[in-house]
Image 1 (cartoon, rainbow, N blue to C red):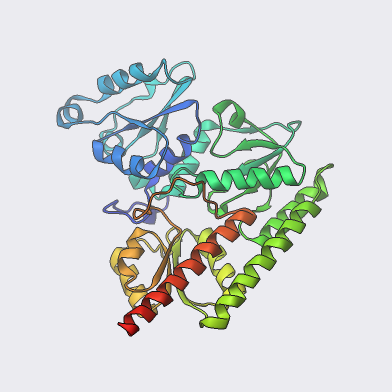
Image 2: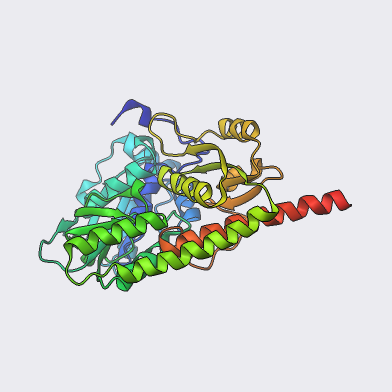
Length: 380
């Protein structure tokens, strides 16, 4: 593992490897996920992930005298509730070097050694997926979906939209990584499309991304070229319909207001998608794009992000609740976890056709509301 991955996890703007592993495993409905560590290590992923997870909640005496008995107790409480149990190791047990491998038994309990100091969310996500060990069945029907992660506010919406688009094209869905059952995920189909290339699984032949209308068209065309029975035309017709709706709404906005100046903070794939959408339809001035997961210069320092926002002086900020606290009077749209200021019950998407429509909805409404607030301040 490169040395620059080994950075402290103090108030991280982007989740650590432990949280990434938990987020991957929590997407399998027949796996019970146990965070083997302190209460803090449990509550951080629990605050981001909507599905239930479990913890050992280690205290001082267990750290001193050994954690195995506590872990054995928690596993025993869960064995009747789940077909399989995944134990995710955190920093303290990993540093202790305690051998908990003996608790893995009969394939029902498996250990994912993914302490936070190994790196960021993506590192842990892929580490956990490697423990699931999906295999491609050359004869399996359907198309896999990947890029789904339970820390993502758009997790379920992206999965539903990807399944809808594949169905519209006449394709069946095989495995969804990671929002599926363990049994389904173990045997994947040969072809895969993704909702977030940052979390591409590497399972099967990659046929493209579903982020953005152009990418949807290219991906469905790629599938139609290799799979009999898949028809790209119904999807292309819906793309044309969505494109016309977005252009009409954006042209109406631009008749009243100047193009927005924008600062974007997210994972790399979401950030680039949002920038393209804003540039193509609103001729936006993209003042800065800062990706949380860039290997060379990750945008995960609160003070640095504050400086970037002040220097950019944006009209619109896309990011997380961290950026929202720094945005001042700029319009804000949530694109990145955590999003703490609102109730999120609806399965919102950012991928696919509905994802592009949904994100532009949020952007236009946020910008219009900001303009109205500014006008009201002038009048008063």
